[in-house]
Image 1 (spheres, rainbow, N blue to C red):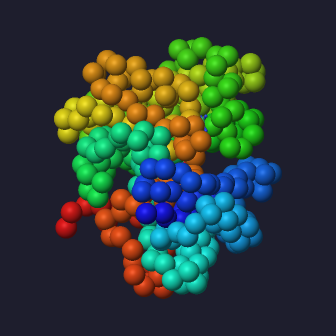
Image 2 (cartoon, protein in one colour):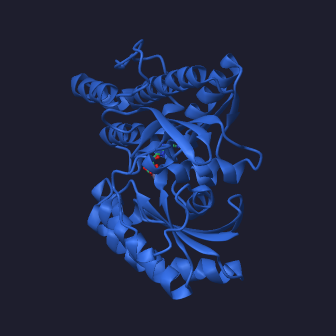
Length: 334
Ligand code: KG4
Ligand code: ZN
């Protein structure tokens, strides 16, 4: 079965055709970073307009490259920016109707999880997946392809959001994650200790606004903040990766699985990938990391997740709606 996946939940306009959830036939991603860079962050209105411009370019391109018909059209319905989601859904509805193909609505987080299926053809549930991105930080227990439970999530900033804000305060360009990673390589990760909430508590939730605010306060106190940038970046990343890996290890122990995965934009970070490997080795777990090209938002992960989605085709494409606050609810058994 070949599915066309369309992703427009934030600042990437992406499309791909994937066969049976695992094999990428062709793909295209247009990154809107140049459109938002001068504002220092994503401007929702610009994101929606840019998706509307780029979808009619990249979707026909991908369909041409696929060189065969698709069996269904899939699109992200949430979570994400509502205007950006609506743009993708309206386009997908029109296309599904014109092609007379079923439309499949996909949860963006399930998409990030499916990026592992594209990278590791042998990976099957059950496993625990840490999703670390600009908009989300969640530990998900993937009990089966159609059954998932959120074991822990952030109570304030997503880790990518906190990373981007710290990077911005250090004068780095948007999006800050990759720049902070580079700067941190030159610094001492033990130069500073930033406070972390919830350590030692029973739940698996996160809070990243505390360490972020601690960095901002520290920068305000320093005489020459520029000289300390690398040490601050390295120490902040150490703090964030430590709490992410600790909670993921606890989650694996709780549900008793031996397979652990990492996904989402921040999974491109080498420090986090290394820390996850160390954690997995220390706990006797097998770690699955996504290919770098599938860490950020892309259409292939949406097409893959659509293949495994529990709700299946909506049948009547006109009924699908955006849900900016979607939280894998369709994956919980009723
Ligand atoms: O998954 P994604 O593309 O979009 C959302 O669903 O949010 O994640 C984007 C986030 C941004 O915060 C970006 O700075 C971060 O991923 N990111 C990184 C790296 N590459 C991207 N953070 C740290 N290190 C990186 N190398
Ligand atoms: Zn994402």
